[in-house]
Amino acid sequence: MTGKKVSWTATALVILAVMGMWEMEMASAAASAAQCVVEKRLLIDACKPIISGRPPSPQCCGRLRVSQFACLCPMITPKLAALIGPSRAVRILEGCGRRLPRHFKCGSITFP
Image (cartoon, rainbow, N blue to C red):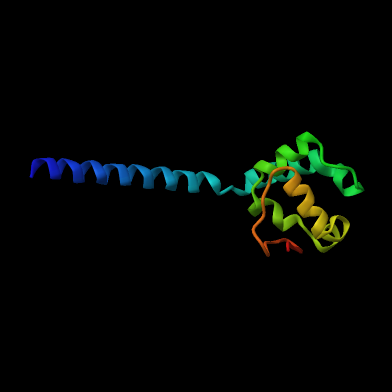
């Protein structure tokens, strides 16, 4: 009986530890308004040339891979969406290593 009690206790501790790590990861994934301002500025500085048709730089791809959609999608206006276009946006994002879910809506762009 003591072996089972230790086993259940160990199992419960492992489950709680995993849940705690998951909750910390989720909490750190949510960006504050101040973090979003910084993320937007960094992305704009790194990726401005893609609006004029140039390919993304390594710095731009790096920003696209780590930036949070919750911060960036609100800045995709209809005007910006028209400049980039959904299919080009998908090519840029996927070319930089960022995968998108099907029918993902980001600002004024709904991805195929």
